[in-house]
Length: 333
Image 1 (cartoon, rainbow, N blue to C red):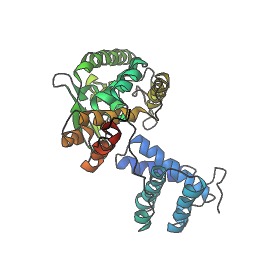
Image 2: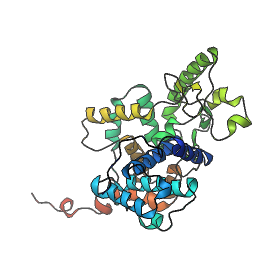
Image 3: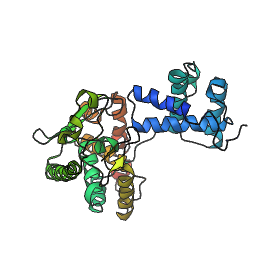
């Protein structure tokens, strides 16, 4: 079996990865997708001793995927991400589609019941959080957002009058509208004032331009400095955009929020393998427990198929499949 190389070499010297980045950006994929695809292309090349992908094909890809499955025991979702990256490389960069391999080699994800916090557990976790992490966790639970959907919210995406949150370009590149909890309105206003303070500081220093989606920066040259386009949750420090090389203020790091939530779960004494995404599971489950129509919950979550939403019916607080246990119906004293 081939071994991983030690880095360097022409294939990963930058030109091929630059082509991958260019192809990704032409299709307006997210920065995280770009990073993941470049990572897996690099790992694939190193595994095959720095051979150029143009010299390889379906057989080498299959060997690499087997290595990920057998030797590294990676999760099915990670294996599929690697396959997606290589399919993208061969189709859109090398112009050599992999054929049927992309259809048959995908690892099957096991059907798992999602972990869900009870309302009491949500309350205990939120009590352990402060500041931006508290706000994010409350929004994930109150609006059913994914973590990155919350962090990428712009000022213009939150309508305080209509109590709505507009998710732009969410999973599957879809927009949707979800609710803004009444209790979150004063906290949203507070976050808007925080964002305004950072923005005014940046403008005073000759900066203040935020990255705009797609080609809006060319279409509206002045929009990047308008307040409505700023992130609702800007980072406390400025960074250099790796794509444009310009200094600006990105949104809060997801890692900092995830670490704070993890610590809060442990501090609350909750023995569940929870995360930020568990708040979204709790949002859906608790709505269904209160009798909300499943189609409405599907729209709020942004699920393409109602079958995805139906998994939450398996974790409703009604016992297994809503059936009452015989132990609860008989007196055994």
